[in-house]
Image (tube, rainbow, N blue to C red; front, side, top):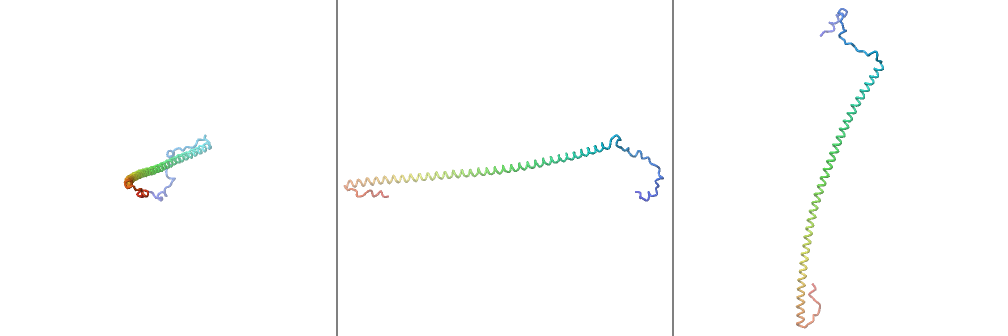
Length: 165
């Protein structure tokens, strides 16, 4: 690389002139036929267009984000509804299980009551049989006593004593 001291002795006037016409492209200048107001209007229109493009992009982004939020909320609602339905189903299953247990207990108690009723009926039949047996004994004793009184000719002094029990 060349240092600045090397160029300090170079005389610019001594170097040959360089033709720069081909090195640079022709610069375009606005037509003289267009007025400066038209250029300004075009710049304003381009700026407005650029601004509308940005607003359109922002609006599209906003709509996408809102849709995402709506979808997310909808999924959450669905999960909550599923959870609720699951819990309700669980409670209904528990209720059915408890009802079945109660029905079984009711049937067991009904069976016990029928057994007790049958036992009471049996005891009542036994007591009726005992009463009938005693009735037979009493009738037999009464007949014997009547026969004794007839054979002896005595009249009984009091009422029937053996009916006291």
